[in-house]
Image (cartoon, rainbow, N blue to C red; front, side, top):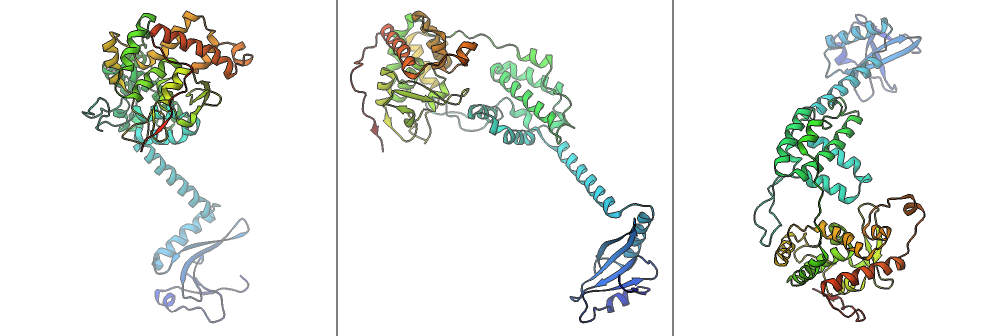
Length: 437
């Protein structure tokens, strides 16, 4: 300061009576009992206790607080404490920052220790969603979903859904998700739904690996508690599925499926078989995915993102005969989205046809199996179905345009229909799309 500061023994009365003279920006009154303590008064009448000292040759000033909030004795004690820190070579401001950081760390640690699996799972899904496909994200949501919702399965929608395999873990504290807890979960889930439990376990392992790499969660997740031999053995290995249509079963299957009263379901099931696409890919098909000019069908591939396959003649007839309800080809009559997977209708058709255990994925498997009768190149079938190339030559050197795929795909379709005894006029113009209000 440019002049010797005013000093006096501070009292409550002096502090109360102190005022800033007109024309000055602020004044200070220094305490004689605690020399580093002063009262600062501004023209607005605001009075503040401050501490001022020197550290390493530089002036150090710290605001203690408003005089209305601090008693004079408390301000003196605080000034004395700060003086001792400065005399010890410590900067009170740095000490305060360190204390605040430590308090924040303790608060964050307490929050993490109290965090449930569901809390961390929500953060995980938000963090990883940009790196996943839509189907993979939906698997995470579906397998952690709570039950109790009205079931959409069946013709009458009776009953409610049950909790998904991972839901029982969501309410646990993350730090309680130990190897024994996961092993006990695996044993229980394997008894009733081993397939869903195996997929859930794989998702859980990836989630815990992510937790182990995150600074906020790694302290409460030791290693990867889901990665134990006991959990893996409890869930067992997935059986090799062999369900597929035999050549001899094609007439009965087509007859039963074509007799289904709902044309969207009938067309959906036939399209599954004749394209070899995944069930979800066919359900997600939109009207603007159908290119009639170049006779192509865009499939939203869960592996490659998107692929274009030939729009074969019979499939074109099937799709063109459907009423146009909004965005989706296989549109629901009750929602704006596509129909739900028609498990019940397909099971009934298979029962009529005398075919047991044929799944939707079995129809995809049937497409691949039936092409063996025609000795279609494996790479052609893989490209139509959306399988990754299995050899270097396929991956880097073989490029098949849509016309070349169509040459093989039309041959496959014609042969399947011939075996099924299905006749239609390939030269006839596909049915006009009908707009439904």
